[in-house]
Image 1: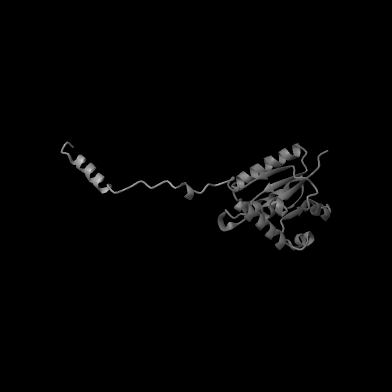
Image 2: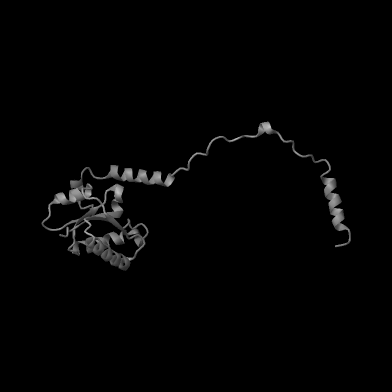
Length: 183
């Protein structure tokens, strides 16, 4: 573009900017931040903790009421005292291992459950947690894996008892399972 139009644009720009002056630097108006920024807020953790607290406060008055009402998913092998379930629910046995079934379908969950329990029995573990979730992500928001566990666990000779985990250990989305002692 050797027609001189670029030079004309430069002149036009200079004329338009002729009365423009740089902004004076004014140090006294600057804000200087002192100290470290505040730590990030764990909002989701706080919401989860409040939900657990609400769940625990809204629960039944006693474990016996819960067991008798049939609201809690639980199982006790024939011939064992109901005291075993109470002890399991109250944390008498330390949870030694856990299996998380989130995101699995029935077939995957069945296979992983069998492998997990076989390994736990071989390692002489007594109490384990199985996380099945609440079914909120499944079709019709149905607790598919919870229902599956309710069918499968009582069929296993190595399972003595199971009950819904306390709120601090998963609440309605997990089970505590008591396994048979191996000599």
